[in-house]
Image (tube, rainbow, N blue to C red; front, side, top):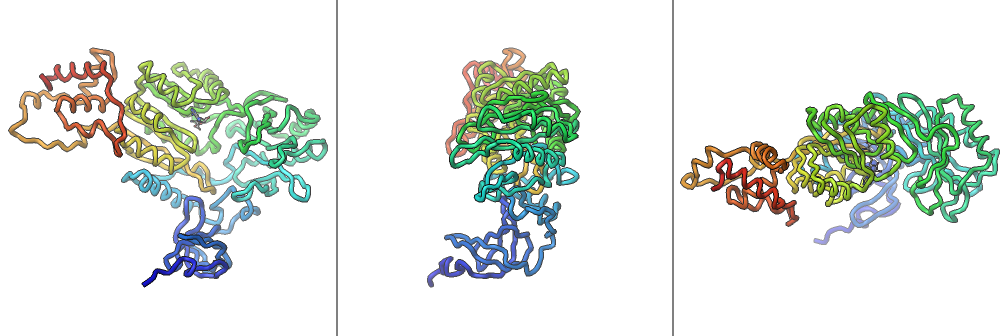
Length: 551
Ligand code: SAH
């Protein structure tokens, strides 16, 4: 019997009736029609739909809703006028409760399918009201084909701008500022940047507002060095009655999709705004990363601190530290903090932020995470806790290997991309770090994005290695005096001033035939794990002799 081809099951322009069973991590509804996957934008799980097929591929089809035959229980009326045109939100037609369930499941699925981890996300933390949470807006400015200025939001998967002053995700005060900038543009010879030709001045409006203080930064991103009649812009903005503290030009002359250029010129007020998070003050420059949802950030940082399990004696390494925020909120419970970040302005902010909060046990390094981690390793820095909060692409294998060779007891991994997180956790697993717990935090309500914080612990071989023992071969003397890994670590630290990892001890034990060899030298697929350096091997051997585990 020949199998039916997909384009025999469904053809373009067909109208089919079926039920949506789930949502993808990209926010599309997914259901099956005669065993074929059909994706439908704007659908809710449980919807019974009449769908018009617009595309048929080898393994799936894509359709548009023609009619909702029966509404899903979780379906609600979207409260946004531009929801169907704007690419920002994905879940406005679904109850927030259901959105949280979907996101928790999305992260669990990624950890299990991509990471191969047998773990479920413990919970998803959420803010009280899933609206007006965004403290940052990057609003594109362009021209429509009929020559009108467009200021608003990109439509789904395009650079076409949906003109609008209002976004329900953003801080209310932004909606007062945008019309003032429109007025400034209308009154003055301000040209608009054209992505195709690279000509024109104004590219983006970039706004930030501090949650606790209400201070605002207004920034125009321009393809040039100045704007016409800047005094008029300043005058208009100051007439808003809002707490504007900083007006800035960002210079971006490059032919790129990256919104901000490297140079900023403050044309009025201060170079930064100040906010408060977790009881600390933070100074934020235009180029510094700062989490966009302050209430969510407090939940996230609170969980990260809990996972760090601090007692006051720990050295913390905060890699990808931005303006130092996560690490600084942990510093009061740690011995010392080292932050690493690649953007110079963010590191300046981090240093100022430490001073502003009288935190004296912190230092910050401006460098690439990979290079800095290696340098710190070579300097003999062995943190007890490493916090990782990389951009969406996650960490390179080299960063993960260097972190594990530093042998921290605990790694706290904060991620805004469940897929790269899961990939990196799988590598950590090979390197001897076990994922203990994961919590999702809904930092970006109504969009498809979700944040996750994960606790990893250095695996103690004692607790998971099966050793086949032949009773007749047991050396009673050695067994009686067998030291724990912790005792060996303490002994080596005391006598040689060296910190050694459980992994290194295992490698040396394996070398002496005390435990089986294979597990400690190779990860899955033959990847090498860090090898115990000679100096440490000698120290561990000394300890094994001391505890009479070897002759
Ligand atoms: N932990 C911070 C920032 C997290 S965002 C917070 O919670 O606010 C990720 C940060 O990594 C950004 O500040 C970005 O500038 C920085 N970054 C990106 N690539 C990097 C690299 N290769 N090395 C170091 N930092 C990097």
